[in-house]
Image 1 (spheres, rainbow, N blue to C red):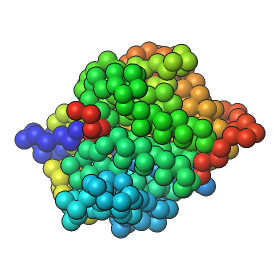
Image 2 (cartoon, rainbow, N blue to C red):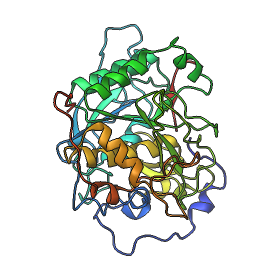
Image 3 (cartoon, helix red, strand yellow):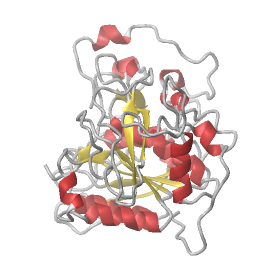
Image 4 (tube, one colour):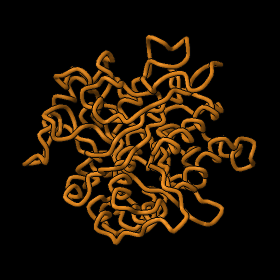
Length: 376
């Protein structure tokens, strides 16, 4: 969900508080509040995500973006419209013949939140500064894709070294019924494959202000992420962090996704393709950056924190459990207690990386309509 209103220009001129001393020299770090809200910068002295890979299964990534190019470890395109898969390298303009020469900037924005180059005197800071990224295009230029394309993207990611898979996408409310009954199982099976290989799967809750996480966030094995605003209140558009696996687990947390109303600066700044203009780009001063809002923006904050944990040698299960146990509920400050609004709370990287490490068990893998759409 991108905020486009006539009031944006005047609202963006409001003075906003910024950190007294930036933790990095990235030129737009003062415009970010996501890394600060999840306390990423306090975790970087313990873990930066080095040695991990985050797969951005989305609408592709601008492989030439100066804040991302050095972070991309590979990519593939599965939105191929009848052509043999994969049909491209994960670039935002690759894929279907009807899409070539254009694309959806959504995946590039998601990628920057999780792992943009950090402390490079440019742009923004990623939550996991030293993690690598896999650009996996499973959504077409219209921002939608088939369950089979998404499932193929997840499996490719696992087979190509992903430690974390980010799914900032989701089907409409009600489609959960098709996955529960097994009428649609492609993505569920791919998530199960990822988890069997020690890979964390993070998925957006959805933007319909609905009571349940959208699928695939609703699916077993996925960690569903609801969105908060700058003030740590639930974002008005965010679905609740409600899901329950058949084993009784409730894997849901929250992270900053932006306000989604009238002010650009109340949303999440991140990378966009250099050729992709937007309503909010005029206040950024440099091309290639824009403000978006949605649970799509919340999910990669969590994926980034998950990479910080996986870099410590944790298992996927330990990583998900620690994210839940150390998450904090705003106002009360209670940690690791479930409520439907925030799930187990806003993830806290500082507390998470300080938790004792539990690695994979011997024999575990070591992963280095009905059309889901990007949840923005």
